[in-house]
Length: 318
Image (cartoon, rainbow, N blue to C red; front, top):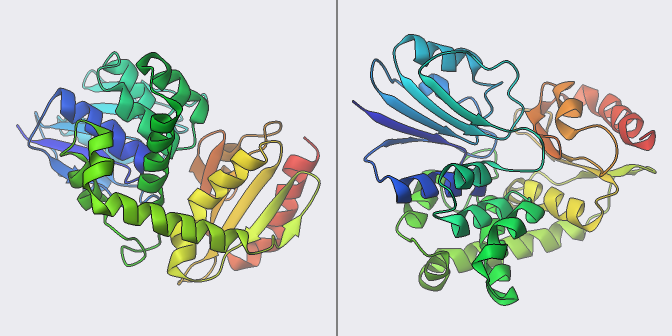
């Protein structure tokens, strides 16, 4: 029997897996990628009797590969909060899915483990911009405001590290980052002992300041569209910047575009508190995600004007 852990390389995916392996240590093969590396199951060579754990990866984007794993006799445990679509019915599929838009994968794992490693679930939730869910998780832990702030910053820094078009853009590869995190049962010990955490925080703050020094390329009554430059720092900070915009102005929608080397744009979308879901909007452009935060892997440059027009129509009329 072989074990495979397949996880999104952002804060939510890393912290979800960390909770599971603190509860049940395993010698597993890690399969992950950058934030937008979603179609991961096709690369998993699991067969009869092997166990595959999937965390924070859209089932909708991996349905055929999931069915192939099940057909080969693999046992699959699936935790996710993104839009799933139709879920295969199979006795070897054990799925905990919730795309309500109010929870994240780390919180789902926390529920599954009955709060055994809740502090890590809070880190993942903070990193994925689910502050309300994170605060619900930390409340029973009775942490002071300063320690809660440290968890929030750690989550944001872990999440920031996952964005980029290639591994050359990021400061540390997701597998490497997970392995560092996996050595610590206590996140405060991680913060104190690992210089990488401080470096991620410093660079994240500097990149956010660069992003805020720019001006939106389009503004309407319902939201703003931002165009970041073709630079590694911009590709790293795109999702974190979008999350920060959503926290500052939750009543408005936000779209952050960064140029792709192959042409077109990578897009991060955050929905307004009223109006359509971000995932429904992005699916019209072959994107995906969840209700409050979604993205488009490649928006054709020729569709930029129609994207902005659709963005205005979606949230101006909301």
